Amino acid sequence: MEWIEGLILGFVQGLTEYLPVSSSGHLQIGQILLNDGKPFPGGLQFDIVVHVATVLSTLVVLWREVAWIFRGLFQFRWNDETRYTANILVSMIPIGIVGLCFKDQVEAIFEGTLIVGICLCITALLLTLTHFYKPREHERLSLRDAFIIGIAQAFAVLPGLSRSGSTIATGLLLGNSRKTLAQFSFLMVIPPILGEALLDVRHMFFPSAEYIAEHGVEASIGTPALVAGFVAAFLSGCLACKGMIALVRRTSLIGFAIYCAIVGLGVIAYSLF
Image (cartoon, rainbow, N blue to C red; front, side, top):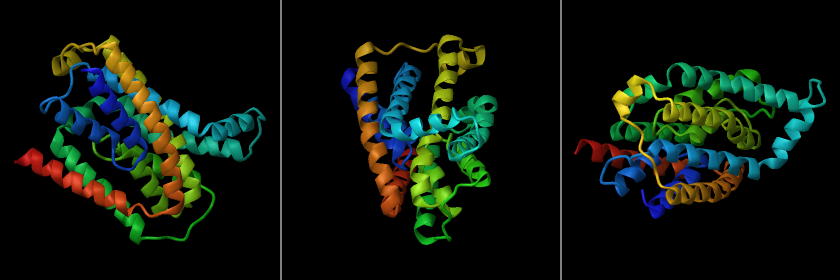
């Protein structure tokens, strides 16, 4: 991978991690376009680097909210901050189970451009439902809703099913306010993204026999490509995170639904024909 390709893919990752259009799906599409229809060797290293960069961009954009949570936790009593933390922890349960027990199996079964296209169309359907179905809103996110949103996040391990799109759409369909979801949907993904990166590091440094048989020995990506990808993912992630919070609070997501439907149908056509 050349540094310019790392720069492009890093930009794509940072931008699409927060926009409801699936970062994993767009990374696969980007690699197909840049590398003659196949993934780059050493892609696991690159995925870890750009995902860590997007987590850092979230912490930078939402540092006030993160500081608010930690200040409340150190008061050691049940308050708004500990309630918020409890919601995040509950939302992590489904993705934690899937990530620890079924991640490799899911990735092995659901791979290829056809799956990406189908899941992008599912993302489009979810976002379209939020445009037409508008339940009565309630301001406070409940533990039940946090768990259901967490289930939506667990399904988003499928390539092409947007993590932010699934969590935001599910929260809106449950009747949560846009203001509440705008921040929660981005803060709740920080632990799973870091956990996924740690699992990938395990594969990179301690690959199992099954992993080597399926993927081969992981190649190394040059430092310029990794640095370019990290910087691009961090900067574009900051812009996308800030912009998406404003969009969720103020406008409909139907434009993203149309985009996902067009790209998804295009990817399906590409994989079939």
